[in-house]
Image 1 (tube, rainbow, N blue to C red):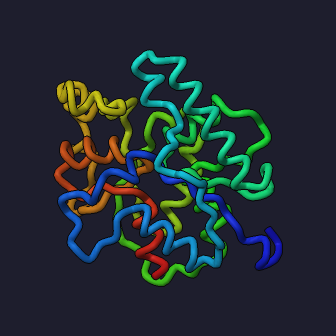
Image 2: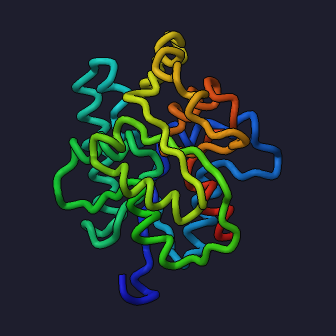
Amino acid sequence: MNTTADLKVVYFPSCINRSMGKNRFQNSDDLQLTELTHRLLVRAGFTIIYPESMDNHCCGMPFSSKGFAETNHSQSEALEKELLKASESGKYPILYDMSPCFYHSKEEFSKALKIVDPIEFMLEYVMPLLTIKNKKDTITVFPVCSVKKIGKTEQLTALSKLCADNVTLIDSNCCGFAGDRGFLVPELNEHGLRELKAQIPYGCTEGYSTSRTCEIGLEKMSGIDFKSIFYLIEEVTR
């Protein structure tokens, strides 16, 4: 991406971020994540390409996690075909706004597409185009399981430190929310994050991650505002 004309990105908002609203800490003036992401990308100078019939597409992970392998593969294949078209056969990068969805597609797709997880895209593509104007003092950050699996924890830390002076990385093998399991078996989430509160610095009221469902569990167990790191980036560069 060397010229203004090159600044195009295909944005695939995850099903969860398309369907879920804001958390209880956010007010009526706050944007829903997909709207905020659109605004942030445009402010950075990107032209955004959306897949056609977007609401009909899913990465397939919800089906895979329930054991419906055939449906998972058909959903994944349909999405790959649509993203191939939207990106002009891989000419433009494809932004995923949730790390678990990116990880699943990375495992399922062919190598023709340049799909990019939210951490790498913001760190490598967006931050160089924006100016940090009001850096945060203290924040808490949680690397979800898929971030650890793809080796993005260091990038998540680097991205967070661009936006805040003091960054606490929560140490937990898994938050226990596991997609929708936290809704059905809340004890998993409670056990997974049993040491969460003790790790949050005194006075810290903001936490960030890259998975909406994990953030629901993190918010519940911490009692502080946990949301996508895209909100942090938008706020400190606004």
